[in-house]
Length: 247
Image (cartoon, rainbow, N blue to C red; front, side, top):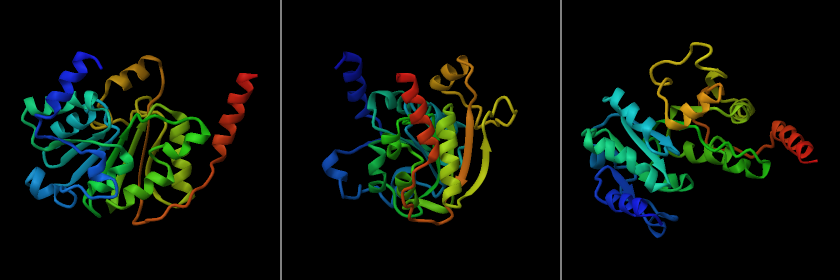
């Protein structure tokens, strides 16, 4: 491990806005903050918004700066990356911003039913191989995680450069009859991007430099709790294309 990583991990332990838990503390167990984020962490009753797979926390920090009437929590397993967001929020005195270092599979150990008002998923790994579809952050498996903590009318936002993930997510929405508020496959080219959608992370700038359109989907679960698995035909097409390229 590099010295810079070691330094960042050590500094993370000093940040009051970063929560880190050992595997043994959350595996099939509830974290002490579950159900108590408002009174014990933020000390207000404002809505809680999560960014899942937050990376360096750029989006989390920008949303928190622009929306002081909401609380924002970035979630990721990469502590050395989250260090940047936690440090910026600490230096700027942004008390409405926090970070949780954990795998998203354990998210329900941290948040109680109805405790979360919105979820942002920004530029996640699209997991393009069919055998990894279950790891997509908009797959039925993850929607069940979200349903356990998200308010019935809570919004889920997906911002991605991956047309495949964009199409997959909209197929998921259609398959379960969920309410889709927005599906835009080029937010800048269409002029749709507002202040929130115009926040650009380092990853997004890289994708824009490559000329890739940025997509956005917004939907709600509508109180649905169970999501049986389904195989999307778009994955079959991708697998066939990949197989042809290998031949």
